[in-house]
Image 1: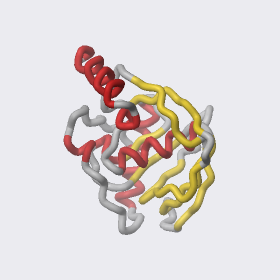
Image 2: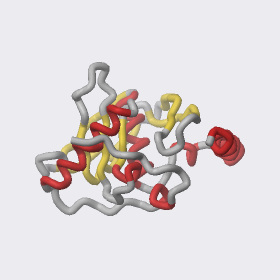
Image 3: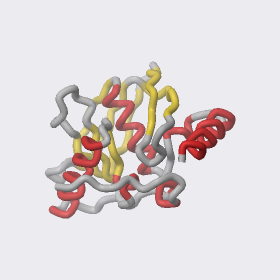
Length: 164
């Protein structure tokens, strides 16, 4: 398929909650393939459709070491999350050059519509869980830095502006 361009922050589409996917079609499968190619080209461990300007609740996550293990999700929702938190340095291709350490639940159970159009529940741990939560934030019109204090968020955005 094709690697797509990630839209730059502060594009308003990154702040708009994405629309649910009604059914899995060949068009959706093609979009997922483009998203995996885009994620691999970054390189990253996840991508949400709004990051490439598509306002649908679609995400891909692949935190495997050798790649090729992407989970394709439509309408993902977190069912359960662990109390134990995990810190990870998060970033986004929509705001290149900056990152921040974010604390998120170490493990989570996610429910989504899979590539066959079936509802699937999946338990994710570590980087898989972190990436999935990061992608769901994008689907809800949030960026990773929204999890920071106002002071830290303002510092990060000032640093990003200086890099432009």
